[in-house]
Length: 571
Image (cartoon, rainbow, N blue to C red):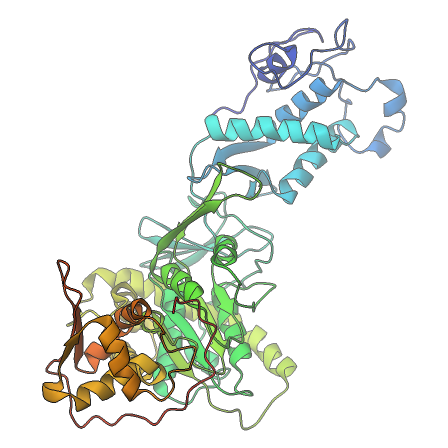
């Protein structure tokens, strides 16, 4: 796309630029009024690569107002049409304009020795175009002039620009992964199968975009150690160490799925601090921790503006948000109408890595637990000043980051050679981390073993935390042949005999709610040796029976009814 206005040497009453054709009041652009009677004031026009700009005489040496103290007295102020035309011309001269697949226009601006990509509706772009106009004229455009110029620029980006994907923090291109360091130089880290290097955005094939809150990653250095990272983590078991490293490796690639990292522990276990440290290696932010949003819409907006979602101090998750988190972890779309519009929509379809922490087990529902890694943090026995810990962390962080990028390089090298005997849930994640084990501080195969152990405990926890699942297990252990068949209404009445907490908000009150719960806990029950099947072709019966995993000697935990999270399920 050539960012050039087709102009020639003209006087102020000619209208042969694309923007000025719109000012003539003709059918091409009825948005603007006719020029004043007699035309625009006659002025000398500066020639440049963009052609002549009617209605305006720039200073001989563009600069600030101090260089031209008599500017406003010596030359008349150009008409609005000429100002808008100049704004568009300057923008096209100093930037290129394209749009994303979601039809969001953006500018690519060369600043010093790098390229910055900025949405045209952002505050930064408004400030940029105002600045270049001021440097050219010594004056500032009005709000109305800016708005009209922006409409022209956005039209150019949408209809004449290319469709280009903008990326947040991480991107994949060919066989390489690119990381935006978010520094002033707009430098990137290019990771390949042979190693990693820091490159300029000028030579990168990737266009990153930055949103408010995104913070700078340190420049990685070689020679760092994973053991340096472990010094800062409050963990006891080798399993937790392996899984935290694995999760970070998984979060450093563009494509999902991403298991949700859940940090649990009582007050005083350093959950929030641990989450902050992990975030600083993956996607640092000026807002390191955030509360769980109230609606799915707010969650999606968060995901559009940042790479890593880090929800802090959770006490429970509503069912509708649990579904949204599942879709974000494994991939799913969201669409909703834009505010103050009848037809325009917000579209979002992507996956994001997520962390959550809380005192209680927040991943209670089986579908969410099935996508999670649970880390239980022990109580900190000896506390140190966080300021002193952080000082040491900042000094070691570049080397730790370099060690992670070396592991990502190993994953790129070995990914297509990994063969797992049995693919677990989140198979792509498991293969990716297994491919990186060559550069990780444990023996090959350790991750898949610890990942399997964590998932087994998750399944057991799901049974213990769900009143319906516990009641089904108790019922199967007591009925003849460990088998039951009947309608949802009959099953609800039967299960009430095996549950002492039917008044709990977590206990379904209607048969259709029970049917929904059975679907969600089916996987956990299956691992316990219990199958649930629904009839087909109008058959409303539910069949519950056992499989080869069923153990008649299974001991069930004594459970106290928890203070459940708010439920939006229809009872």
